[in-house]
Each structure stands twice: as structure tokens, then as C-alpha cells.
Image (cartoon, rainbow, N blue to C red):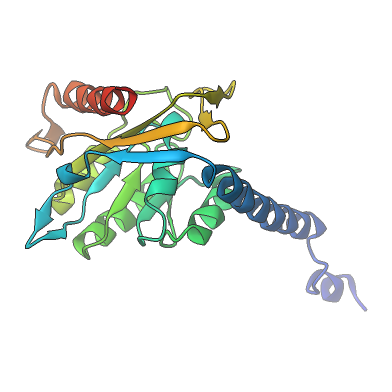
Amino acid sequence: MSGADASAGGTRDPKAAKRARKVRWLSRLGYWAVQGLARTWRLEVRGEARWPTRDGARVPVVLCVWHGLMLAPIWSQRNRGIVALASEHGDGEIIARILERLGFAPPARGSSTRGGVRGLTTIVAALREGRTVAFTPDGPRGPARVPQAGVFVAAYRSGTPILPVAMHADHAWRLSSWDRYAVPKPFSRVRVAFGEPLAPRFEGDQLAQGEVERLVAAMDAAEEAARA
């Protein structure tokens, strides 16, 4: 067998096969870890009446949660076919597979730093089709709690409101990551709260002055509601 024939076989790229196995097993472990942990929480969801409705049914929104506070909101919104934006960085495929196992739609792929245009296009298309989408506007690498432009553009282009959501846990681990990712401890009282919906304002093709601050204030208010 020639070298060309060998390279065309199933063992062409052992490193790729190893990465695929790693992603597969880590996504399975991650899913079961989330399931096992979250089912111990005493979860309360607040402010659901703030979700806009039409004829008694929820309308699509852009769910907006800080990267470091997303675990409990993900759990609270499982099995609803929400489209999330998963990064194309190293852990993005693992997160995408966990989300699908939790009943989210196949995620849009991209971020503020890689694949952003493609991811944003997919998100806008999903919103126009009547799907709710989930954004971590400061992800995947921060800076923490500084929203990037994508969440505003997606909402504006689709005519969809942004709905802030936050979480608070009485007892949580905080990872040493850039976002201080919060993992509620087993049997903690965990509260997820929705904030007031808002529609971003643009002046021409530019985000209007003060819109970033308005979103941050709405996110802070949602977090206070979860903490109270």
C-alpha cells in the first residue's frame, strides 16, 4: 500500500481521532455532571411574566446572560429548543454537545473573536424563523460583563427584544477563570430571574449612545432580583 493510500484510510489523522474521542467523552461526562448537580438544587425562577407574549404565547427573544452566570439559566430553560451561540474555541464543541443533550437546538457556531459573522447570521435567521436564542454577550473570553456588539445587532436586525436573565446561588463555587464562573453547590437554593425586556436603539448603522450602559443596568437589575 502506498503512502497516499495509507493517508486516505481511517487512520489518516490519529490526533483528530483522539480529539474526537475526548470531545465525545467529555461532553457525556459534562452532561451527566450537570444533571446530577442541578437536580439537587432548590431552584426558583422569578420574573417569567416579563417574557413578552402574543395571544398568550411567548414570543421569541434574545436571552442575554453573563458568561459567568449561565449554568442555572441553561438548566432552567432546557428542553425548549432554544438556539445558543457556542464558540469555536477549544471547549465550544463540548459545550455544544452538552446543550443539545439538554434539549437545546443545534447551536450556532461563532463568537466575538472567531466565526462571528457566520454565528451572527445563523442567530438572526433563527430569530426571524421564530426561535428564541441565547447569548452570553461577554463571552467567550471577556472582558467580563462588557457586552459585545453581537447581541445588539442580532436583536435589531430581527426586530426581537433582548431579555436579560441572571442567577444567584446561596452557596456556589467560583472558578478562577476570567469570568469567575459560578457553579451552585449541591442542594443550594438557586434563583434564576428575568429582567425587563429592551429593544436596542440604533442611529443609522451605529448603536445609539448609552445603549451598552442601558443593557448593563438591566442585567444588573436582573441579578439583584435573583439575589433578593
